[in-house]
Amino acid sequence: MLNQKQIFSTIEMIEQQHLDIRTVTMGISLLSCCDEDPKKASTKIYDKITKSAEKLVPVCREIESEFGIPIVNKRISVTPISLVAAASETDNYSIFAQAMDRAARECGVNFIGGFSALVQKGMTDSDVKLLNSIPEALASTEIVCSSINVGSSKAGINLDAIAMMGRIIKKTAELTKDKDGLGCAKLVVFCNAVEDNPFMAGAFHGTGESERAINVGVSGPGVVFHALQSIKGQPINVVAETIKKTAFRITRMGQLVAQEASKRLNTPFGIVDLSLAPTSARGDSVARILEEIGLETCGTHGTTAALALLNDAVKKGGIMASSSVGGLSGAFIPVSEDEGMIAAAEAGTLCIDKLEAMTCVCSVGLDMIAIPGDTPAETISAIIADEAAIGMINMKTTAVRVLPTPGKDIGDSIEMGGLLGTAPVMPVHKESSAVFINRGGHIPAPIHSLKN
Image (cartoon, rainbow, N blue to C red; front, side, top):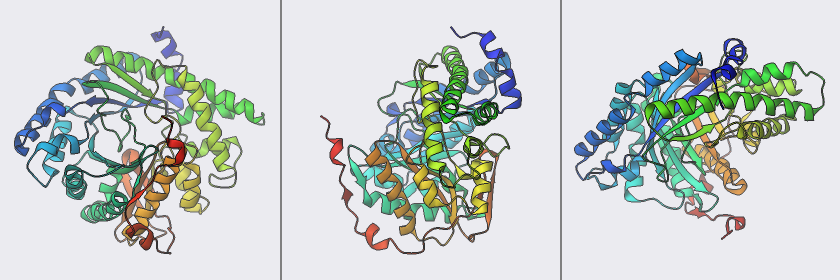
């Protein structure tokens, strides 16, 4: 049974090792908000979000105060808007994003996710409208996040949607160029997206979820790093065991917060996502964990193996500490949000090709990577296709969140502030992938998807 005494034993981790609850995210179903009149639908969306989540931030603050546990972000995820808006007679879905934005700001949360569509096998008229509305929606809102699922292990990969997303990312960057293309930091393209992810920008409330749910994301790279410093020179199996034990302690705290938030908000507990989510603060880095395991610099040979060990040990330790583990769960490698990754990228040790290899063994994928502003849309689409293929073949979630910043080139950097951090502009291959991307069509699902 979880109690305050167990939490007090983690005070050192909280105060000195950057342990926190990265997010408490309330998922809300908006299926009841469908209406053929887009203005009425927008009003219903605003009303349901504000009514459902009106106590989310105050309750999180109460838990922070009572248990001394930092809760960095309070967020909302909603039903993919392409499903909710399908009944509405409009071609521009920005009106729904703006309603989400107003409601989320009224509730006082950091971000709201769910301006989303699931197009892994094909696109409905509503899906196409949503995709085409993304640039304006993200440029005209402050805290709305968008995600598109373009592939799955069961359905294959929708190359037509991927081609569209390359152009959409470029347009989003252009419409937000006064903020270094910040709109692209709120847009992620998935393969095998999950329905209960509490982390942005990819969170949405799946149709298989309950009317509302509380999902919690924990984080503790600094705690793992500190634990490994006490076992220098020990065999690698000792490293794995130490990470497992540390992940267990971290996740127990997340379980407590999830239970408390669920009870106080009278909302079902969904999952704890036990991902190691880094920040740009020194000592809170996944890259530094890999270096503590024995790499001179993150990105050198051995990085993928060390990350595989870390990711597996986190899952093994965390899954025993919670009654329901879900989301993405593992280790994130967002370049701009990890001071060790930033340093390795600036030194030239960490490149996009190496990051792609690392995504084969960890959570999500190519995340928060700044690339030259003149990168062709087809190249961006090809990067997405590569990452989707890794996810499809390996039956795991992968994603791409790249920032083609207008006017920026290799050697420059972009500053986004807060948890989004600083991103050095990284090189991409100059050779064209346009003929491949412009073929369009659908990449079939792998043979091992036929498991029925």
